[in-house]
Length: 446
Image (cartoon, rainbow, N blue to C red; front, side, top):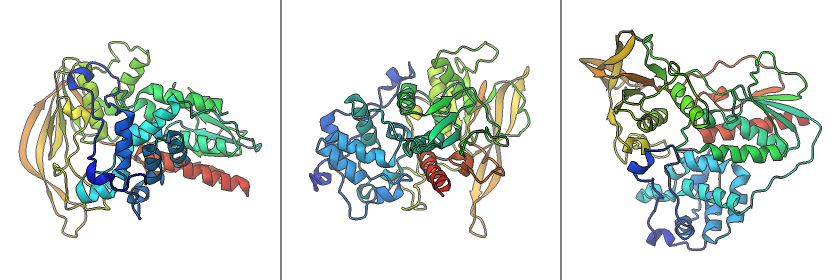
């Protein structure tokens, strides 16, 4: 490493977010960037550990010590070359990945100040695009064709890898835009859709064919292909089947998030179909990232107030002794959306929706306790009888997604991403797409 002792003198510095009063007025990306000098200093903090746990923790097997060293030395083209060998889309993961690598960084484990790996990853990619290091490549064709069903992160990764191996790849997308979860499930203030468009344009120039508005029945796959990669995601959201569910004003989170992204892309909706939080008291049920996205979107739409409830207990702040490394640390996460103004509550189960003239006006919730299971398994939820009504005019259900049933497939069809594993992280979907591409290549090379 260029400076093996930098971690002793240079503190962790994050780029941070735009000021709250500024960012809630638009849907532009909230995260800022560091200047090149500060970014190189942050890269220099990497210790080049003998056993790099960051590499071990990354589903893609990224090699942070190597690309951090290149950044510190100003070798941005080399840094991107190293990064792109393991990650097809570092501009995506550099923005929205929860950074499993950083949770395993030795500086995280020893002093709670990991290297800014995720931000450095995004900076490398943006520099590579800006400086023209990324140019379309053309690969020698092997005469075989592969169909990829679904254009989310798994489908795009599989298509990208198969194209590099010489296959003629066609990606089928049932919706009107390419991107899947990246396009419709993630707000623009976290991932600008111009970032997706830029990558899709590059993939098209490299020979990949994209077909939108084309729904494929996986039981009747299109003819003319030697193999198929099914990356249709986990589209079915987990519902809350309690009395009053039929009332107006109760929506799945993705209905709202996808519609807002479509509006920002230029589409319009009738007043009857519009899902908008302007002037409303909004209740978000579910404490994960999707719930956080609903909070930020509701605030930008002009909600009167936003409350988020979670059935699980409030996690501890900073450190959780019950989830030591190498487990994922279950600690309180405060997102940029939470900072923008939101009431957060825990240990609340929803009993029923309350309506007025066919529209939701409140939710009866009950405080619960979580008791250790006698057999040491999953904790048992115990209602306490303490009930109250939270007044609301819009409810957003953000409780995750159901794992799709795996269908019977022909031997030349492979699954990847959320379709195979159930809802997961974008970085894991990219890894799954890359693995599926390897399996298809091995199958067709026999």
